[in-house]
Length: 265
Length: 265
DNA sequence: GCTGGACTCTCCCTCGGGGGGAGGGTGCAC
DNA sequence: GTGCACCCTCCCCCCGAGGGAGAGTCCAGC
Image 1: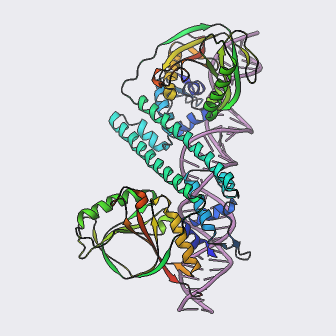
Image 2: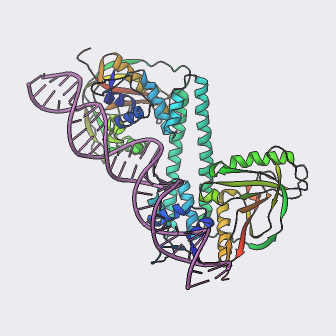
Image 3: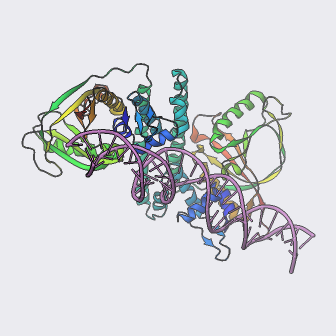
């Protein structure tokens, strides 16, 4: 039996952290003296402590660590770990995107963006929609678009998306992806939707979506300087996207922001 | 002039977050109505908001973000950003190491480790020492070892290190790297040191240092099961290391833990 | 000019995974 | 039997974000 200080020395986890792990039911001492409250650990607990240490280095949340170390079945354990490695990978993607975008934002002279005002009539489309959290949008989008592609055989234009502002303001919001078609079917999640008529401030973003926010900013500036105000969910149209070419620099995304004229303008 | 809600819509930063950035002097509204306290932003602030957004996605701490966006000189700004990208890279290394180690920890049957007790006499060495934070050890080590290599021309053995336990328990501690030699010089940070005589529990770790903790655990278990206790800073000896071969799987690191016999043993 | 509703303000609580330190009880070698 | 290192619990702080209460403000429509 090892006192907490000695166990700390053997595992390179601080005494404080060991106590917290006890409180969190993550690494319970082999015995606890009921009179003094002293924690005593067994040498058998060293490997467990090491696994916990590594998982925490990967920022795995404590409840998930508990689930992993308390799962007896090595197969299930490997699965849980694999899940977290996937999460790390997607975080890595996010980091890569932010780095790329930052480079362009800090580049000496960003290319100017042309913004125009366009009246768009009400349009019937085949759509899939849901309430989605901000960091799940990419995954949800891939699934929804695949389903649309499978169901809609005669698209009459480029696919698009409609993104509620709450998605950005509150981290969660309504998202809709669509393909324009006559007689939209009603299969699975796919169903017909009529997108309402709006007046859009439209700009075309060229290249990867990593720095699409730059174009959003340009549109926003244009909208404000032209005495307009933003009035509804953002529309995007994927003129050229991953389904057309793997070369992200060739992608063309139309960004449309519903606007209305401010009284004072 | 844009009210906070509109600016939020244009930048995809939440209203809450914008207020916090104001409090933190990070993104100060162009004007604040002194009577009502209402914040009003200018469209010129959109690009700044976007840079901040990206930096935060990279987990750059707010004070550092402030330093970056408030530095007028683009050169200095690029330098600050580059520093953070370096930090991201080293975090990535840490993640890689933790993943590799985790894989080995969860591997079905880890190789057994031979531990032996060895009396080591007092030894004179040429050393470089400092108080270092845990996450700076690797960088400090590289510099110190390079200086030792440059100064010590006639090493009579493999280099080594002595690591205070506080390094692990409190995240900061005394570290010493050394090369055994006769008549150690006193040049720059290099100076002679006599390592005291100790009794060491010694094991040899084979392979990359990513999972050296596994061997530490084995030594710890051995120490305890042999009725010994840990008594001082850890010693490592780099029998075969990066200076000998780039093939990490061939590295051999001797781990020595000073011990003394427990009375009851 | 008034009213209603959307918008904004400040202030405090919560969360997660740690660290610092106070104040007091324990274990054990001498 | 005494000194001292060790251990205990408890509370506060940190960061960067979100939730919600309660009150004040802006402005379009009437």
